[in-house]
Amino acid sequence: MEKRVGSWHNANMCSNIKSKYFHYSKLFLFVCISTALIFSPVIRPARVEAFSIGDEKKIGVELLSLVRKSFKLLDEPDISQYVTKIGNEILQVTGVQFFDYHFFVINDPEFNAFAAPSGLIFIHSGLIEEMDNEGELISVLAHECGHVTSRHIADRIKKMTKTSIATAALLIAGIAMGGGALSEALITGSMAAGSSANLKFSRQDEEEADRLAFEWMKKMGTDPSPMASMLSKMHKISVYRMANIPPYLLTHPEPKRRLGYIQDLLLFDEDSKKLPQRDNFQFLRIKQRILSLTKKPASLSKLSDLALSKSDSTGIDKTMAHYGLYLVHLGEANFEEAEEELSQVLSAYPSQPILLADKAMIFFKEGKYDKALPLFLEAQEQDPSNNFTNFNLARTWQEIGENEKALRLWNDLLVDNPDYSRIHYQIGQIKTKQNKKGEGHYYLGLYFWYEGDPKMAEFHMNQALSDGETPMTIKAKARAFKKTMAEIEKE
Image 1 (cartoon, helix red, strand yellow):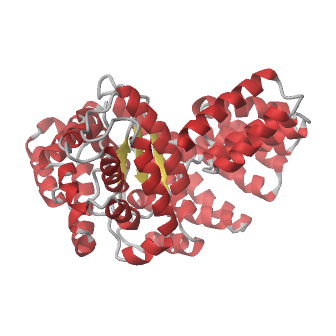
Image 2: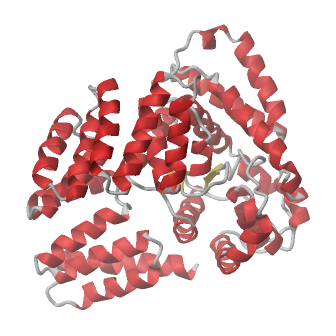
Image 3: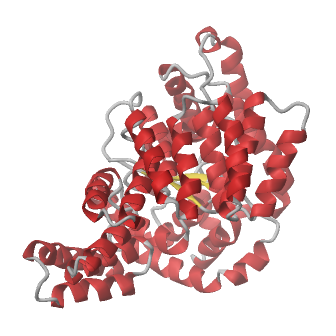
């Protein structure tokens, strides 16, 4: 089943496109060449046919490796778990799918989200920054799933009968990146910018994805009106940036038109008017976490102060502004101030166990593990499946020398987070301390691979294989992983 590679893209061009082009020039060359090679084995020259499901899965693995090299993924345990949870809620109402979907947040300021082959869906941090509630996030992810389900990218490829697959790949990749310097360089590098008209995502495609998203939100029991507010923001940004969009990237209908028919649906669909809006605590906490990882402390502090000073800020907005200030102070090791700000959030939401884990983080950062541990344990007891709590509890066990307890928790976390680099790093550290150096090298190899550094990954895998004390099971895994890495790097 084919994936739609980008949809909220008219509104994501930035005015400094030329300066960014030079900054990324080496990366552009790598991506252009790599993307062409990724697609070239799939279909032989001259005519582009539909991808098989097997081909698409293979491309998905290679594309994810490429994205890891080109972008920084915000794969913090709570961020990944939250976005995946929302994505899975959508998939519960979409019907049978051919792929195991994976949802990622990219550290990038563009107003963008896109779906890629084999169930990979990416949302940029810049888009989440503009959102006000969980419903808006659902509307974007559901829209992307709508393109995937409808196989819109497959339909676009079929039109490119006179275009080589390498050229098609560059055009697809450029549109998937959603604009900006990287997107423009990919399409210009294909030397076929005019051919992008063949990949134009039609009004019918966009409307079909929107209508599917609307119906899916209703099936989820969620108020679909945030679709309109999200499109309204998209329209404002597209008007502001329209002058900077190259003609060959104008591949989507104006968001104003999409906003029009969504407003009509909301006006005449009586069932949608009865649906409740979502609770926004989890969304706003995650949004603050993303801001703390993508913005300088002074910028985040200014945003929080602004929310506290505005007369029209809601109670939850002001509460989560305190949470933003907590994160600023925590990052700057101002522990007393961090605890004071977090106390404001705890008083408003005393029954949220994640806030106990947030409080424990203050003591963890201070090195007061004896105070952090009981808070993490209490938070875990109230919410045993929370990855943020369990991740930091495992770190605490490891810091106080309880390596076996930490290792059990790390292995549990790997079940849901098999490609989260920092878990592999922590396991590698434990194995090395236990004088199991070969196993340590294996896990460090995984760490570097998922961090987008194939050379260091290969080095550690080779070390694992050359160590005479490495267990045979680990050596077998190392050989298999080296084979996978070599195939991907070759492509």
